[in-house]
Length: 252
Image 1 (cartoon, rainbow, N blue to C red):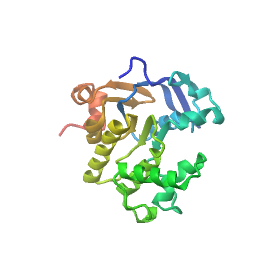
Image 2: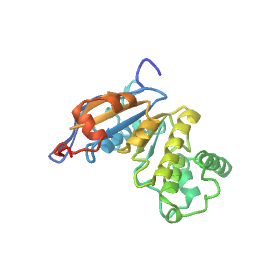
Image 3: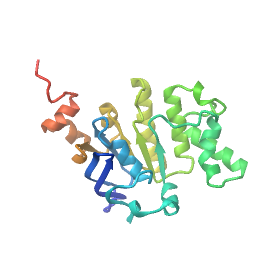
Image 4: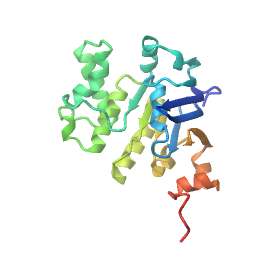
């Protein structure tokens, strides 16, 4: 882990209509680690990820990536940053009119690659990394939920990124498929030497993949530490979240 963070977020504020989603959120992410971001549904975790690839601009605050504040960049200036960041959206966001091969190749074609042999080789390698070779002619509608996630991940890594953002990678998947996705996240971290930020509600996933954990609560960072520290803390707010208990629950 490097001395300086790869991504340093400071005092991030975001509002959607009258609602303040992020209220001075700060976070450090270090090169090569997997950081898991936990929090309640609708609490701003996915909103935060969208700031990292420039899909949303903060009301105020800074987002330093490799020492540069990307919150101030325009679309043209963001392009080289986006090339370094791959994102797995919650629903996979595959193009239903394209088969697996076409979906995975899409970022290459968008960036101007025209050599079909190069495209075919890179698609093959990306699908192999996520154990999806042999499915390249299938349409998204014929894939299971887990397969869709794998294809979307292959698309995210087709041009090997420095950072991969995962938005609820195990949502809607059964425990066995979820475990395979968790193992894949860990394997890609080592194989590609990437930095990973994983937004999830899945504590089992968190304990399996996290180098460090942050908890977003009421728009701010409430916890920042290791998975073991999260598991053993007696802080009542964290215990309610970890134990899946509403603050209004009465003990039986």
